[in-house]
Length: 371
Image (tube, rainbow, N blue to C red):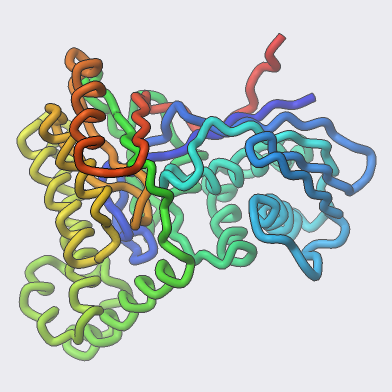
């Protein structure tokens, strides 16, 4: 029997930049998914989700199957298919049980954690010896092809490459990475609004298409050097974004500004500059609300509640339209913050909130079997 753990992630800053070749700063968190698996002697997989109380059967010798039901099995099948394509051979079948401590619909990337867990499982079981970045890229391809979500690399990279006590600065174009220490006296709080994340695949893909429309328009004035919005500086954006039609203009304005905010946030984090961290997180949330239009009343209410309860900074995190906010809080005031933020949010919203005080965790790994 093998056990694999894979963490969820929360993004401190750098939202909707990853599929624009931009910068992101996620943290793998101590909320995680675990997969318990027993290898089989054939290519069949019997996979049971304890969280959803669902079981599915996959035949690894027949991937991709003609039809797959919606839900978690698409992610597992996608990872298996991408690994088999990369390795050029059929993987080992398993009897597996999935146990997740990640709240569904909160924007903490439970799908990427599931992908990462099965990637690490088969990497170990079949002795593939793949680099973690390669595993992340294969998981990303699985989500593109099997779930129909054209996500960037951030979620999978965070779940597979995170380090305890550190945020992961990732350049999604070059894949250059830095593990940035977090101030030890700051806690990460995931503040789930209780409203399920409702950014449909079509809305997500529409935002991506609008960014691509902006790139085409900017190429007309800045030339072919603009491959993605990553290539547009804030100064260029101020000059040339007014030439782009709405709503692509505002989508691009968010991405250009957010990339600059990530770089500024790195400096603020290294100096534990609470005033600058607060300002950058608030600017990020305002841009996601007004320019990218992926916030909602509940996310706005949660940010306000967290700030009034004494957070260093807070912003929505994840794809949007529900889900969670991330707050940075001084550990010395954590308990008071949790009580006060919940009280303030309940006064503003009808949903049942949940608060998770998290540590920055290590990436996916085999774990000792519990006795």
